[in-house]
Length: 483
Image 1 (cartoon, rainbow, N blue to C red):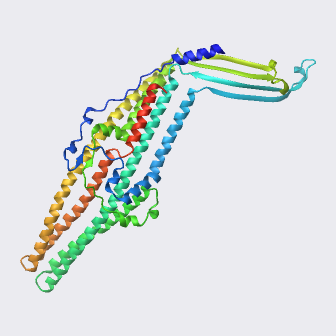
Image 2 (image 1 turned 135 degrees about the horizontal axis):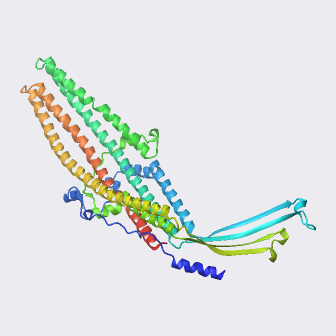
Image 3 (image 1 turned 180 degrees about the vertical axis):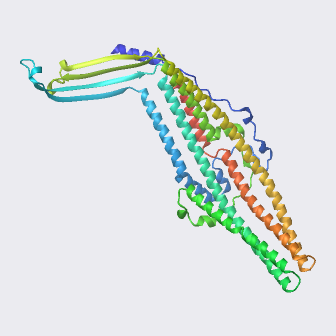
């Protein structure tokens, strides 16, 4: 027994892990400098992004909706369930590190035929057999250790996937809430424009009664009013769709969403440069990049799992028990038995299947590396695209604001000239149509500015990055030391 224990210790000390040792892939060099759009200080800064970025809007209603979504959203619940499943798989793989023990007790009563009974012996009797068995797989070539590494990578990837869903849900919640506020503003603008054009309709009707305008002038004015009025129902439908989307995001049915949400939603404004950080920090923060990196680590470890099949497996074990013809004799020394020993198993003649599994694992790892590189490039692309869209939309909004001011001035001038008889009603209709189109475009641009902000915050990776980065770092260190 002492020799077996010594052999176990020596084998454990000599154990090694086959397969490649995972090395964190180098980040793309172009990711280190600040983003291209950060050269405009009025738009963005290289400060680190805020984790709870939605709080920058300082809107308590939005804060409450985001909290509801993080607590009750069903997509997040699915991601949490997937994480729990990955953790359970890790527990199962970790269990292979430890010895297994079993306790078996069997008792019975039998009666033999006379032809099978020796003279002078009883034909019937009871038997008792009980034993305790211990077995231990010596992980000489690291198959179990590599399996634990792979499972740890899967857990970290599922954890990052959960964070990615959180980022998406927060962004969608903020976007739906922003749509509510912006659509309410666009509806207000459209209704105000209807009232303004209706005043022109009444003025044109009075001029027609006075013989200073034609029937065509009144028809054109009424047509413009009805055209503007026709823009309101689609906006109302979009607003209701935003309400329904917000209900789903926060885990409610549309009927359960508080009625006050539709009336208290405000147009979101952010009067400060957006903190965007730099590319290197982005890659450490984005959950999809973290997930791709952890899956690469897991696939690398699975090469070692497959490689271990080329080498022998060693199991040590022992058993002790008692076999007797009665319960009273079960605890006597004559009934006691024990066994200790080991088993070496090695399929060395035909290893083609094992080598095929190694090749498959290497191919999976190459695919995971390509996926990681692609994810990094997509992260940079999405961030640069969102920042560019936000910057140019701000420029567009400023141009529309200037155009709206000029269009409003033109309406006042034409209206005054119409009263003096210097222009006809057609000039007023054209001026009001221009003003209506410009004001509607400005309101729509306000909505696109907020949408671009939300898209940029989502591209930057959202919150939870510090905790997630800590989890990945700790997991990576644990994998390297083979704990």
